[in-house]
Image (tube, rainbow, N blue to C red; front, side, top):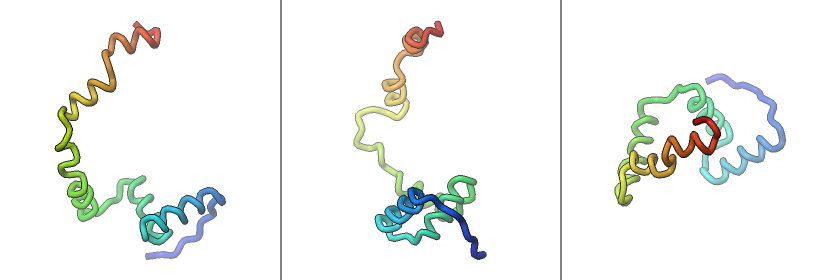
Length: 86
Protein backbone atom coordinates (compact mmCIF):
# COMPACT_ATOMS: atom_id res chain seq x y z
CA UNK A 1 0.00 0.00 0.00
CA UNK A 2 1.16 3.53 -0.62
CA UNK A 3 0.35 6.60 1.44
CA UNK A 4 -1.45 9.41 -0.39
CA UNK A 5 -2.40 12.87 0.78
CA UNK A 6 -5.66 14.43 -0.46
CA UNK A 7 -7.53 17.66 0.17
CA UNK A 8 -11.18 17.45 1.24
CA UNK A 9 -13.77 20.12 1.83
CA UNK A 10 -15.19 20.37 5.34
CA UNK A 11 -18.42 18.80 4.08
CA UNK A 12 -16.59 15.86 2.48
CA UNK A 13 -14.63 15.24 5.67
CA UNK A 14 -17.82 15.40 7.75
CA UNK A 15 -19.47 12.84 5.46
CA UNK A 16 -16.51 10.51 5.83
CA UNK A 17 -16.38 10.97 9.60
CA UNK A 18 -20.09 10.18 9.96
CA UNK A 19 -19.81 7.14 7.68
CA UNK A 20 -16.77 5.94 9.59
CA UNK A 21 -18.59 6.21 12.90
CA UNK A 22 -21.69 4.47 11.51
CA UNK A 23 -19.82 1.59 9.88
CA UNK A 24 -16.80 1.19 12.11
CA UNK A 25 -14.54 1.40 9.05
CA UNK A 26 -11.65 3.84 9.02
CA UNK A 27 -11.79 6.92 6.81
CA UNK A 28 -8.95 5.42 4.78
CA UNK A 29 -10.92 2.20 4.28
CA UNK A 30 -14.00 4.15 3.19
CA UNK A 31 -11.93 6.03 0.61
CA UNK A 32 -10.40 2.76 -0.66
CA UNK A 33 -13.89 1.25 -0.98
CA UNK A 34 -15.16 4.31 -2.84
CA UNK A 35 -12.26 4.07 -5.27
CA UNK A 36 -12.87 0.36 -5.86
CA UNK A 37 -16.59 1.00 -6.37
CA UNK A 38 -16.10 3.99 -8.65
CA UNK A 39 -13.44 2.42 -10.82
CA UNK A 40 -14.74 -1.14 -10.74
CA UNK A 41 -11.82 -2.64 -8.87
CA UNK A 42 -13.54 -5.12 -6.59
CA UNK A 43 -12.23 -8.39 -5.35
CA UNK A 44 -13.97 -11.69 -5.93
CA UNK A 45 -14.66 -11.90 -2.19
CA UNK A 46 -16.36 -8.47 -2.19
CA UNK A 47 -18.57 -9.47 -5.10
CA UNK A 48 -19.53 -12.71 -3.36
CA UNK A 49 -20.34 -10.86 -0.12
CA UNK A 50 -22.55 -8.43 -2.04
CA UNK A 51 -24.41 -11.32 -3.66
CA UNK A 52 -24.82 -13.09 -0.32
CA UNK A 53 -26.16 -9.92 1.33
CA UNK A 54 -28.71 -9.41 -1.44
CA UNK A 55 -29.85 -13.03 -1.70
CA UNK A 56 -33.53 -13.37 -0.87
CA UNK A 57 -34.11 -9.64 -0.58
CA UNK A 58 -37.16 -9.84 -2.85
CA UNK A 59 -38.65 -13.06 -1.42
CA UNK A 60 -41.48 -11.44 0.56
CA UNK A 61 -42.71 -9.30 -2.33
CA UNK A 62 -45.95 -10.36 -4.05
CA UNK A 63 -44.51 -9.46 -7.47
CA UNK A 64 -41.41 -10.02 -9.56
CA UNK A 65 -38.71 -7.45 -10.17
CA UNK A 66 -39.91 -7.04 -13.75
CA UNK A 67 -43.48 -6.44 -12.57
CA UNK A 68 -42.23 -3.82 -10.11
CA UNK A 69 -40.27 -1.96 -12.77
CA UNK A 70 -43.24 -2.02 -15.14
CA UNK A 71 -45.51 -0.64 -12.39
CA UNK A 72 -43.26 2.26 -11.44
CA UNK A 73 -42.43 3.16 -15.02
CA UNK A 74 -46.01 3.15 -16.17
CA UNK A 75 -47.13 3.03 -19.74
CA UNK A 76 -44.50 4.22 -22.22
CA UNK A 77 -47.06 5.95 -24.44
CA UNK A 78 -48.48 7.83 -21.44
CA UNK A 79 -45.00 8.99 -20.43
CA UNK A 80 -44.23 10.14 -23.96
CA UNK A 81 -47.53 12.04 -24.09
CA UNK A 82 -46.84 13.79 -20.76
CA UNK A 83 -43.39 14.78 -21.98
CA UNK A 84 -44.77 16.04 -25.28
CA UNK A 85 -42.74 13.47 -27.21
CA UNK A 86 -45.49 11.43 -28.86
